[in-house]
Image (cartoon, rainbow, N blue to C red; front, top):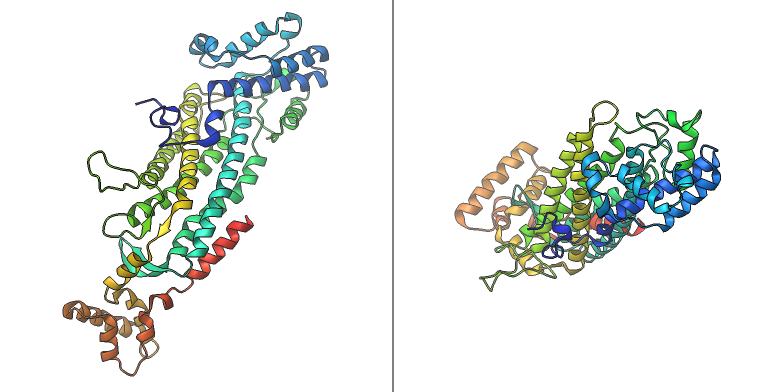
Length: 441
């Protein structure tokens, strides 16, 4: 098995990442760091920290030169960070030592790497936003179309009261609306890093905070107005968002695994997987991937949190933990979203199976509604006790609860309580409200 299934020739179609995968390659990281180096030189030239002619040369070179990540591997293994090798290769490729000497002036490796990371995460979050928009559109269509379709609601795996399929879809989608609404704020606050060796910015002259603000403006990032080398909150905010996204999509996967299983069969998938030996099998591959990806992202976010308290001004072990965990976390969250997008358009409820499941309870699924109807005529505890006795009779006598109720309380109208379409409460409204909110978003 490949080290990462996301870029494996064998497994990549099972765990697709869409366009986000290209942002987490060696080449993408090197390009992002070069962009930071070039822009830093440009703002330093404008501030008079380095000669403007050299700044212009470095900035242009950063846009034009291509560096081979493989040639930096040996030095990265020795230094524990790729920036020294990158700077050395960049200066060499410029072939103008009189200008190249001013590249990376006063910056530290973490400034370049963290800022480059934020540039790549900005692009990733933009793609997440697009993907969520497409998924919400499909879920809105599904919720609206089946807002009034009754099915059993289940708690602890047991029949509870009727719900609608549209409301189930809405409950998958509402958290996604909330997550998408947070994205704009997260993207606006992606911070630049420019603090120098120990976070003081002393290498940038008398006003390092002004240089940081100019670099942020030039790169379209936020000015954090502080050093965050040893504060991983900005990164954890992003991974926390992705962990919550994966969890929301995992809930969708969990429900689909259960609703497609033999004996329930209340939903059909547009696509399903086959068995190598059992020709009758139609395996819920996509929903299973959603659940697995949610677990993977949760585990990796735990690793990120474990590295969230770096020692002193910089901590190699904590930083390395981020490098091992963050790319896989982002790609697994992206894969969950991509998988959900592929699933949603093909989801189809099976009304007959839902109706059979509702009928199979012999009316017991409506016991709560019956108890509230009786509570109009007696105290609530007495009504509950009476309905419990009626349920026991229905089971013991193999009769429908509707008939037991009509026989026991002939003076109370109870027949309409046993119509699932009349027992949905706010479920249809929630389904339609979700559809409207999803389209507004």
